[in-house]
Length: 171
Image (tube, helix red, strand yellow):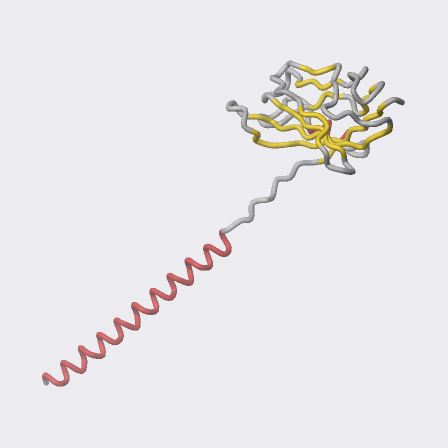
């Protein structure tokens, strides 16, 4: 009888081990399936380049109220300069009262990616006019990009928005 007891105990131990293995495998499969199906891809947030074809659509998105971290743009899309070292007679950029963040912006030439103007920080409600470029450009028309940097309370850039700009020198 003792051999039969050992045999029964051995069978019971084997069955228990198999049951435990099955439970562990099912649990692991459950975790894997949960991780694969439960994981949702976060959409990549990208900035929008604003041009004359989509400006109305972008302006509609910027209607009141302006959410935190957003920026309502108020600027001329063409800047005219009598010469490369003269202040513009019409360049104007404003950080309107509806905005929630200070900003600064850089102007770069589209063809060379050369930065031709770096603004100071513009707190909400301030503006720049009579802008003089940092680079003395020869006469001509230049396609440029204005990159606005929205700042947090520590003046660290939290996001950017890019707009097209035409600069006319001596025309």
